[in-house]
Image: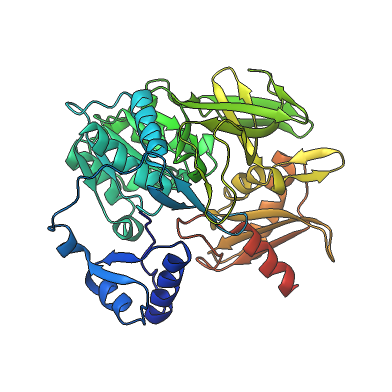
Amino acid sequence: MSILPGPVRGANDQRWADATLTRFLGIGVRTVLSQGSYLARLRSVDTAGVTIGDLSTAAHTNRSATPVASEGPAVLQGTAGSTGAPRTAILSPGAVLSNLRGLNQRVGTDAATDVGCSWLPLYHDMGLAFVLSAALAGAPLWLAPTTAFTASPFRWLSWLSDSGATMTAAPNFAYNLIGKYARRVSEVDLGALRVTLNGGEPVDCDGLTRFAEAMAPFGFDAGAVLPSYGLAESTCAVTVPVPGIGLLADRVIDGSGAHKHAVLGNPIPGMEVRISCGDQAAGNASREIGEIEIRGASMMAGYLGQQPIDPDDWFATGDLGYLGAGGLVVCGRAKEVISIAGRNIFPTEVELVAAQVRGVREGAVVAWYWTLTRPGLVVAAEFRGPDEANARAELIQRVASECGIVPSDVVFVSPGSLPRTSSGKLRRLAVRRSLEMAD
């Protein structure tokens, strides 16, 4: 099984259909199911080698109960591609089941009392895992279209209230958005929520705290906050905190001041995590930053078209972090670290500070070190407001004060113009390349 997204607003129907079928063919898919207008668009393409069927009809046909091979491919999961070209992870039935069981065990899913509610896209690993984990546990689940959330994010709270949901999941930007504009919230009951997973992108401790405090009058329990770590290569979840603890923030003090990082819990059952520092692994709670490596029963068999991986080998994630007393802390991507005057600065720190400037869109900031014509830190951000000059000056001052580095350039672009992946993550390398080419 593999799931690809429908067309986004403004897409050319014919190009979307051509590109979608090309991607399916590229990963070996020969039967594609769709519905409504999507179905008609796909059927309009010359589909040699691909059978296109109506999802509503297929749902009522007889299904085979023949067990599948435990090590054969069950899910072909696309990776995010936020820092490079996306790849396809091959997940076996055993890997998927192990991840779902590990997640359910960690959060204590109970079919008799739990209700899930999600608007996450099913073509994203977190959205798919949330749905499948509820199904495996036998828990009721409310699903809303991702487009409905995008059109009106505060409807998410109404869905949670109406369903009496005990469990939900979303990337960090959704919690930040609700917390920032909490004055718009009224007449919802969030008292049943005990699990609110936060994953898929860096966690903003201040933003998540603001969300929890703003939702407290509506019955929200701050202990339900579960900032987590995962990736498509491990099916989804890697580390998840125990419900009831809430947000744990680890403070680190260096030459540029104090920094807060969210603690993302310990590995779920069946998974292991270590920090690789050169030729050796860092000890638990050592706070020594190195590359995060993982292994376990949830791991992929390999990338499509590449050599299989040994399930007993450690998989280098490309993420940097350390192990603290409460679990894993992620600092950023290894390839994105900015090294200046002997200091390592993570772009996410700069981006979170820049997003505090009025008019700058949260989750729409990219920072990197320019090495071409004008060496220095560059910040690109989507901006909407009447006074770019003052906003630019405030951004530079904030970053200099809180991160200890002065941006050499700040580039404001119109909302929605920074390229993103199908799951909504900023395509960092694409942003960087497009601006460097325009220079």
